[in-house]
Image: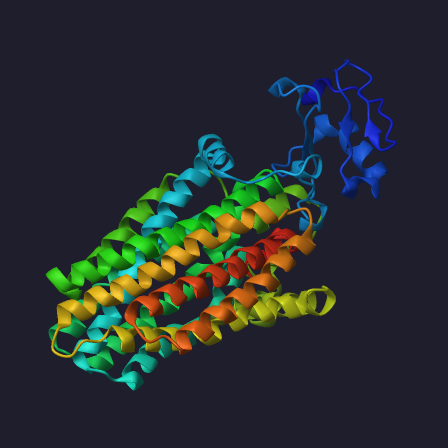
Length: 478
């Protein structure tokens, strides 16, 4: 279809295909009215393009047949140039859109299965480690706070490293390697329980969450590479959030039940197995997901930005000794990538949104302390485990409903709608916390936890969409 599109087109708010004739008029998205020359050039050069990134898809207003759709491709994958087909007609993202994406996109379908397995294991460890701390240091808020610190501090220290790795190497291969390593690390929890050592539990938690921190930006930045347009990206990000909430809803209950019946050790075994399954699933994903290599393939005339890795690059100029070169090359490259990130944050117009998104972690630690405190029953480990699982299931229920409801009121082509959803959700989140502060019973605590997570999940999904829409792929990992 694309090779036979006529080259004569006029752009005056509508586009007409002169040869061959295609029935129906095609509305030009608002974003294209400011770049009509580039748009016509993209059509005329369409037969020579080889990029896998699609700027837009235009469908006849009078005919829903697939033969009337025209794909317009561009060499550049700059996020600011993405134009979605939903600009033509405002599109509601519902269950049908999710199923359609899963049917047509094999790689994303497999990735989502891996995503589900990985997060299911995460919640088993999350619940089991809280229960283990409660058993080893009963009713100790300090012990729980230290455990939470072993989760949060690695996020501060190693997330930027994961982002840099995501922007240099193949994301799929990195995910497989990290999944395999985490499946091994999870087994050390069993030693901590065997010797009843709280200190060793903290060490294992810190190591495991260090690799989780590296994994997080990699798995998030690979999603746009699976997608062809912004509509699919919005559906995918929403499904990722719903999958996370689904694993929390059922994983929390199952983890609590498993810990109560079989002990916390069984939860750590489940986590190890889930990472193995996740790695096997990612091995089935096809394609190259190294954005640096794609940039070099697209812009063959540009100078490689990671030349320090190659023989004869800057590293060997500075350090004639090859061993010193091997040591300092990663340091120099990481420093260069960090400077690129700093320069980008200085020049872009949404820097404060990036930092504002991170403030959501301020409340995560306090939520765990409060939840475990309310779940504790003196002398009854099984009942305590079950109540912890129920609390996290209520959190998962709110996370599952939030993005699904917000989908009907947001449009990825209207950035203001994503921002508006985040602002309203902040009020919902605050209302949930006010309710938690005055909760007088276990059911009311679960209810307001659902309200809190309902707002929090809307903020998380829509702020993620904002970043993925506005940030170029080559810097998205960082």
